[in-house]
Amino acid sequence: MGADTDGRLLDHRDQKAMTSPLFLFLLVFVGAPLLELYLLIEVGSVIGAVPTIALSLFTAALGGWLVRMQGFGVLFRMQSQIAGGDVPAVELLEGALLLLVGLALLLPGFVTDAVGFLLLIPALRRGLIVRWLKGRGVMRPAPDTVAGQPENRADRIIEGEYKRED
Image (cartoon, rainbow, N blue to C red; front, side):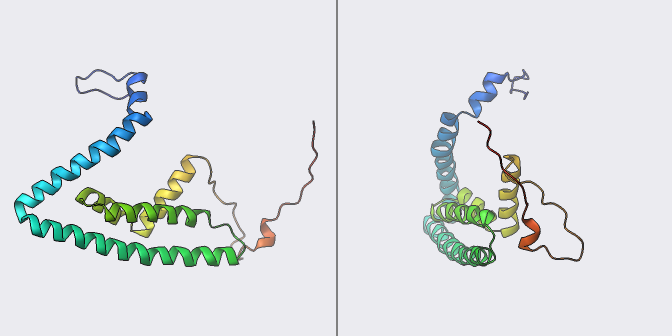
């Protein structure tokens, strides 16, 4: 249980309300734009309106170019995995996340740009995807292979019998 600002413990209903879809929707679609607007106004009052707009356009252009370059890298990795007979599951999720990163970088604002540029770091992006998959129980550790011998496709085939019981 977490603690409230009054020092009282949050009960299960309070914690459930904070993770409800309506709360998350309001946080993302109302809270985030208000924070972005506040930061744009503050930065604009310090450096001026035109430099703030120019900075926003520059981050959008730079972010779009970086997303495009990394998208091609993910695409080439997917093609090589498909050619090798593997399923490019992590790469597909990486491509979807890059799509969201591109959207975040095109939106005007400094918070979305910061999150977008952080997610352009390949190791961080892949680590978040792998952590998310492991948390859902989708990804499990691979079995140990014999040291010094590369794993090939035949090593992953499991022979067995199937019997349907109705």
